[in-house]
Length: 235
Ligand SMILES: Nc1ncnc2c1ncn2[C@@H]1O[C@H](COP(=O)(O)OP(=O)(O)OP(=O)(O)O)[C@@H](O)[C@H]1O
Image (tube, protein in one colour):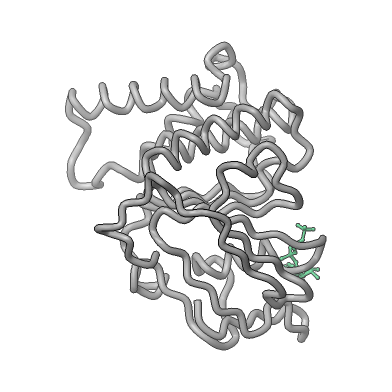
């Protein structure tokens, strides 16, 4: 993102933000309530329009970007209530849908790969025992894990999570740390909005801190040892 500006109700909630996320980065976006963290990650992905500046995903503006299956986005809150009741496995399996071409129906190998990826994601997030439960009846923290598992099942290259640790217990935080370890071990790129790093701290390679819609501090903590320097292109 270069010179990114977002206005809400005539007010700049993101002001001239420049941010480049590199392949293999595990970036924590920090800052107090209302600093603009959620707005920043949504704007990076084109989910919120920029009033000025530009953002690109793998060098392409979001409106023309076609590689959405490479991006796993976990929103802050889950629209899982009401609607059609779905089991945890069904919700997590929906993370595989983006991988399928509309023009090419699933073949046997795809289905086996889908099942294996869904099983792995359920296991990583400690949800195997809940696979047949109705997702909308789970607790908030468990639902958050379901969302993370759904994104994980899609095996994205870039994983964007908005406050995955907000209001979740130690078990869910440990499950999230396990998911992150799996992703970073595979050299994936992670952007994570959070108030505090907690158990995720050892996995973070960079931080940006927002205040009143501006980046007030940036740190590089460490290189991700699994980072693929051969393809270390900006995302
Ligand atoms: N849809 C909207 N309409 C109007 N203002 C909005 C909207 N979404 C966000 N804002 C405002 O933009 C500012 C930044 O909000 P944002 O959700 O990005 O902050 P945040 O840092 O993620 O906060 P939190 O830690 O509380 O989630 C806030 O002042 C908020 O009130």
